[in-house]
Length: 472
Image 1: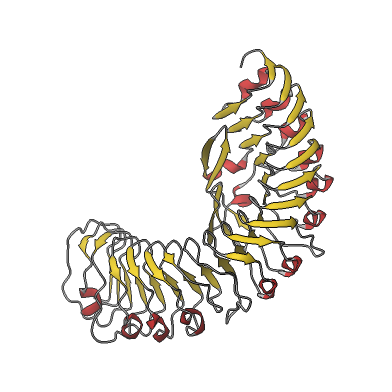
Image 2: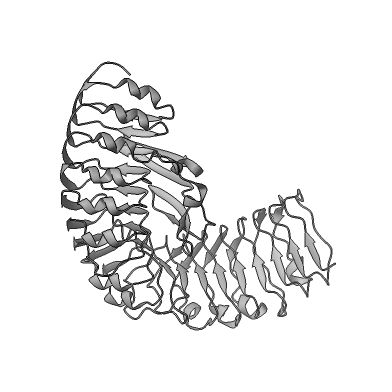
């Protein structure tokens, strides 16, 4: 036997005899339990691929005493394996090119013996209990390493100056700042360091990283101005600087950007949103919540024809809600709450998002994951596609999660805590698939429109603290 695939079976507490000729084994999602069997590592001398992911295996990893040069792929993810990684792991499997031990209970330091794996391309040690520093050798001495995921551990120390092209270091306890000489031997595509304890100013050297498509710095302690040279990252499509201490003006870029997702929420940005964003025809999501931005909403907002998520709450925007927003046919989430908007609600705004979208507008195979806490979706960079798999929209102090294809229609609108006056337009009935609607804490008058009866999908409705009359 050279291949054994028993995926999604019930093999609890079963063992296998020595199969010296076995080259590939797949026991993923098979309800295996008990201690991690060591026979497949010690006795199967020709084994090239071992997949035991998504079971209930416990115990520690025990390696054979002699090198297994045939082994190329090991996936033990989503189990309950504990203990430390054997320090000689790299010497026992010198030709390994994929190692996935994510979602286990492994602890201790990450061994430096990975440098002995000359063919190593992907490492996923995320969601464990690893501590200590990130070995610099992972970037400098693993020439073919393309993908490194160390998310959600207890790693400390500073970011190494050399990293693989795709590096997830988020959810740790890393300190210091982004190295001024940060580089990758093969060019960066993604750097995710969100939810660490990084601080300092964003070094201008970041803009010298060729090919960077995703930069996620959310939830750290960076401060100061955002360097204008960030506009020079021509391949940048995902930028998340949210929940830091950045201040000053949002940089204005002279060249068109390729951004599809921009999150600047939870900082101290002042001034207005730069007009240069009008040239960003690919932008799907813009979040500038919780800043100190001011002025009216510019007319060029109507040029963001593909925008689907527009979150502008908790700023100092003023004047009337512009009718330019009515030109956004694909808008699905609109949050203008906690500003100083005045005047009436434009009736045309209640026609926004009523055009049905096709699956091709939203779906692509997930490639990277970004969990913002308020919006979570995987997206495929290469095809500039977006798959909003779960959207969390907060209103009335509650958070509602909407799944899968809900973004084919308008699902959420929050205009609360402004100075809006006049009647609620009858066109409110056009939002037949809206899930959450909040017009509270304004100065709206008149009767509640009978067209509210058309809101068949409504889950959260707040019209409180106005001067409305009648019944729903």
